[in-house]
Image 1 (cartoon, helix red, strand yellow):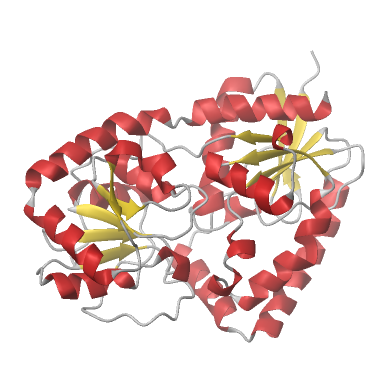
Image 2 (cartoon, rainbow, N blue to C red):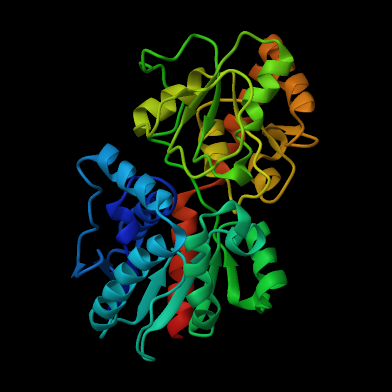
Length: 371
């Protein structure tokens, strides 16, 4: 039987192992395990195609600094850098995609390909449309230059949550029959209760935030809430500092920067709670990772977050209200029985999200796109 030939834009795999890069690595690992006898996968690394996924850079800290530098450039200069890189990659990709049946894209928007190649596009969120003011200006301009005109070339869409699918129907006018919900998942071999070492700067009791300092994630409200609460419990953050310029009152967080998976699992396991007061998420992977490690989750009722956290979440009425958050954090710090119950519920809920199931649904959509 002839194998289905799939080419994937794997450039995100060659960067820091977060977000889209983690999605692609986990999804394609699951696809190769389950459907390796029926799939031939080509991984595009920005210049050429290989049968092996590209590896992340050896020096992750240096790569992170380069990204920070791009965000600090004037918008037009940063857009020029991004467009020059895009056009070089698109020319290379157009040539590389010849002879493939399916092209899978999971980043901003699809590359241009010949009409014989069917495009399947994973949409993680539409925050560049709904909250453009919360993104670097050059990123918004880049997105708007290409996104809408490339949608017409897509055969099938994948959405990482029911919320994201609803947003795609509402904002893009897409036929819901063309969109399949394929949830993100976690890696149980990585994210599980882990009594591992923590960085020296981390104290015994702490609240945790994981992610970029993207303004829509509302991280800047957490130090304010801790100051109002009167708790002697610091905030520890893991992830890129990002591009937020929001004012942060209260004690500054203990910033760890990018953390490897083992450190991240230990941080989740030992935290009083993950505090994730985001106002908009396509999925909210740190919430699921925290639950898988037995970490209670304080989050918002907005967007996809209740879909992920379910009954395991402790929900903020208003994620931008520091006083309201302070009351919840004080309760979490002082109620070990509540923490234990939410930990139990999170551990029970996390297995609902499986890369094997996401791979199965994704493979079905690959087949449907060419059928």
